[in-house]
Image (cartoon, rainbow, N blue to C red; front, side, top):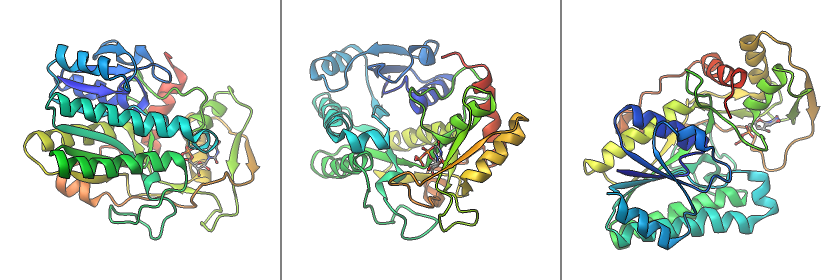
Length: 324
Ligand code: UDP
């Protein structure tokens, strides 16, 4: 049995669905503050609770035969992390310690962690590989970076085995449209553009048009959620067959600008999208593009989605038939 924290959230629920279809048995622990029970109703046992509660964790580890933990649970609003860092340090870092300590108490050794390209901070070079210096520029990125450091120390001291996966921009939805992205509030570019195409919003704000990029807008590496799910599955197999602890970037290795994203969404949706040019959003690096060579060679990761429009089509299918 695999314990998946935050399994009812956007990235977690797509992993749970993927792993369930491959035959894994999963217990999801989620406080449902941002997660959706509906997202895992057919694919896992859902326990609603707080991952920082050692008593609950002991009960879970005792009741279910947990062999490994995949840890998605975290708050993930960069802007909020600047305004309320305490919330982020407590939830994302301190509560993660509670999960790791429960693993040690119950002799569970394999841990997969949702890390982020936000641990790198401003890019020194592009594409960014795993050796890129890590100097996060906001508390959210710091919480992920702290956990990476904790993992290294726990591994040295207690023999914990981990894989930390540094996601670039997770996007898209299950192609059959039964689960997808649903944040409240929504702050991410792609769902906001598609909701504008659907007429749910008046316009899409473009944050910054004077960056040193070909069209002046920020460039990101948008990776499909099922490719992220696949990487977790491969990372789990690798750990369970004795692989060493490691860090991997997950990205497409291609950059897409905000303007390019809007044009692609217009094409996929067939609707005109009204754009509002706005000042830069604080803390946005101009360009983030992954090198994912390490995940490809060591995990055997083969992302299935490398065409940006195809990725958007899955998100569009979800946005037009959302269930939650
Ligand atoms: N962005 C934008 N308008 C929006 C939301 C995002 O122009 O309404 C830009 C943002 O500045 C960034 C990119 O889109 O350059 C991706 O932002 P998102 O919040 O989706 O992900 P992030 O890269 O911050 O994790």
